[in-house]
Image (cartoon, rainbow over all chains, first blue to last red; front, side, top):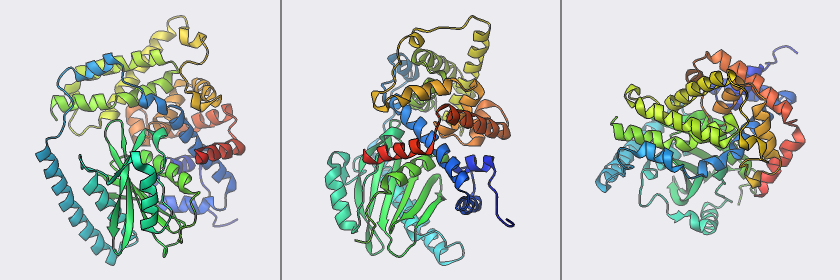
Length: 262
Length: 174
């Protein structure tokens, strides 16, 4: 068949590992639609990564042996930020978010405006709340059931906090946010080293489903997608492959939710 | 960066270093010995850490070099039979069921070169470029080892669509 694009083996691995650039991703996605065998292999590779992550997840939760901890801690304690520093960082983040939001809005009206508006909202919400020490979330993970029911009611579409423990990330909690004239939700996760990750969710009845897209703002990266009238953006200061793994896991977990028209 | 914050950055990586070493060596006490050596060497060389260097990449490089040294030493010695390899399954989590041991064993059947790449990319989420730097090999070599290693792993695990479906189904129910 002429004109049909063949996917090389190396490309297939690179696709799964999040190594391809935007246009290449779209090309491989399109080619996979007509290449069931390649699709099967891609899924198998992704599953292998997932299986490795799940199988060794318990090591991340094990207490660090005393000898190792002592070795690394020999000079000085773990640094805690003083409240004044935290405040300064929060305000800086707020200003940064406001400036970046403005820039993104301006871009959105111009040429490169293909990124949906919710992505900029997700980045801003990430940058504002992630540095928070005392109030990172409105409702904590201890009240997850209540949190999810509340957000589902306010967003007008079923939402759920995906389970990322197997990847070493614990749910911190979530909050309700305004996004244009609608409600949006943010779930926050934290790993053993204190890094934070946010999942932004919003009802998007007007947009058709879309596969993963990658976006960056400063040193923060995000994968965003639209699944059954719900827009998701997973943001964090993580490398692309790690973020992609988490996004895939979330996508798989939330695929079973009721269609978003509600 | 001050020495204290460098030490903190090193300490923060310990859980990930242990996870990688455990998967790489398939034996928890050997893995922890390797991490102990890695930390000692890293802390002795904090001065060589250039500002802006990614701590994870730097530590994985040190770990890799020590691992290679260990392999060389061992090839000159009779094979080591640790207590762990004689006992039942070491500390595999019960939740993973029977398939857990299969994955450990299958990984140990890859060549050390393949295992490193499969784990650095698939488990640790390093990019191809970072993996190439950590192992001091070209990116092309990373890609070919990755493809061969994953191929072999899939064959060893007889990974088929039904198992994948089952796996996905189990996760969704949880």
